[in-house]
Length: 167
Image (cartoon, rainbow, N blue to C red; front, top):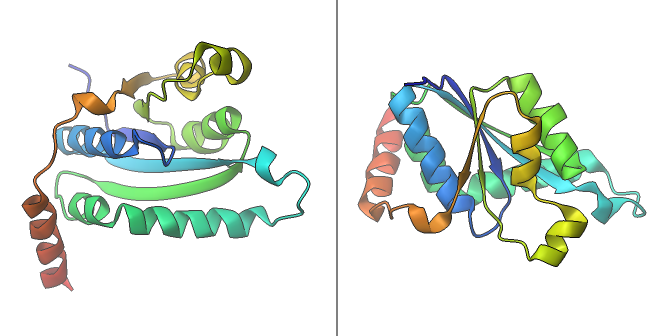
């Protein structure tokens, strides 16, 4: 069985993000792996506005940290998860994910969610998961949210309590 020492998870802020996070941390736990969570903000939204990309990336990183606070606390206190980091970039989504986040991290596994685009939208914009499958030099796992079991909330509370006692 393959061992995954470095896992990259592509976050999209959508419906599948929770499932991607759960699957990522479960696999990381089983493999004592390092985890890099990455998110790309589509630069097409800011092409004409003169908006500072670094400010946008930092603000989004903080929002992700806050939204995933319980999951991050649990993973960071898991002795079987070597490390957890989050990076956010602004750019063309597929290219930026692969060239700026995934390749420099050199993961053994990339995890992303399925978005379920309509065939018309897929024909015009493609799919991030398809792009990753075609351009990554490692295994790519595409997660369906309905395949992930709920984690009991008390497990998050226990992780938060453990983190508080370490301070």
